[in-house]
Length: 370
Image 1 (spheres, rainbow, N blue to C red):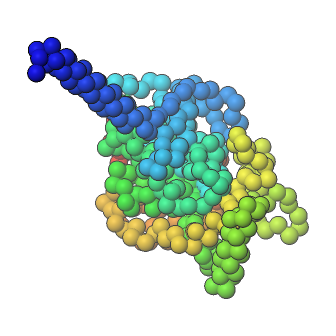
Image 2: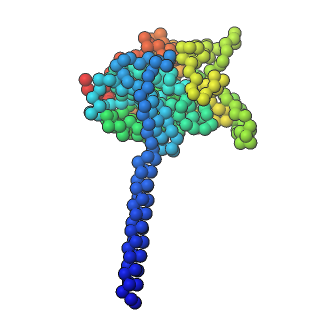
Image 3: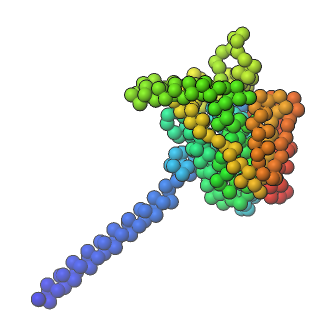
C-alpha cells in the first residue's frame, strides 16, 4: 500500500470520525434541550383590572402561567405573589381549585387573591377540559386527570426558586374539595389540605344529595350516557348535562336558584375564551357517569398525619359531604361550620368566608414565618 493511499485513508477516517462526533454532539444537545423544554413553563405578568368576579390589592402581583401535567396536557393558572416577598428566599405556597363546572376566574381567584394579600404565594388553576386549560372534548369529566392537575401544580410550584417545595398546601372549593383529597392520598408533597363547601362528586353522582337517587335512576343515567357515546363516536352532536339552569321559573328548586344567582348573574358569571354561555358549568353527558367510579373518601385516613381542614356553611345543602369526610379522616383534622352561610355564599362573600381561619391553618402547617 502506498504512503499516499495511507494518508488519504487516514484523512478520510478522521473526517468520518469528526462528523460522527459532531452528529453525536448535536443529537445529545437536541435530546438535552428537548428534556429541558418538554414541560415548557410560561409566566407573564397581567393586570386584574379586566376581571369583575374577584379583586387583587395593590400589594399583590398577578401572573398568567401555563405548565404541562404528567400526560402533557397544558394546565392554565393564575399565580399571585405578594409584592413585599423576598424572592431570594423560599416561601410556602397554596394551590386553589375551582368548583366543578367553574373556572379559576371565579371563586378560586377570590380565595387565591385574598390569601396572597395575607402573605402567601398562591396559584389558582383551571382543571383539564375547563377554562383555559387544554383537554378535549371540552367540559369532559375525568376525575383522575383533575387530581393529576393538582400534582402538576405542585411540580410547577416546587421548581420555582422562590417556593419552598416542602411547604405547599392545597385548597379545594366545592367539587375540587374531593379532587384535592383524591390527589393528596397519593401525593405526600401536599402538606396541608383544606376544603370549602365541598362536594363529594362521586357520591353526588351515584346517590344525589341526601342519597335521594335510587339505583334504578343511576342505571338509567348510565344507559343514556352509554348510548350517547355511539352518537359522538359517529361524529354526532355533543350533549351536556347537569350544571346551572339558564332561566328561573316557578318550578326551579332552591338549590338551582342558589347556583343561578352566582353563575348566571354578573356576581359570578364568567365566559372563558372560546367558551359559550350555553355550555358553561355543564359537563358532557357521555362522560359525566365517570363520577360513578369516583370514591375520594375511601382511605382518606391515610392522609394523616398531614392536617385537614373542612369548612362548610351551617345552611349549606352540601354540608353532608364535609361532615362525612371529617368523620372518616385521621388526625389532625378540624371541621369549621360557618354561621348563616349557604353553599354558594362561601364562593365569594368575603364577609362570611373565614379567611382568618384559613390563614392560621396554613401558616401553622406550612411553617409560614412573619
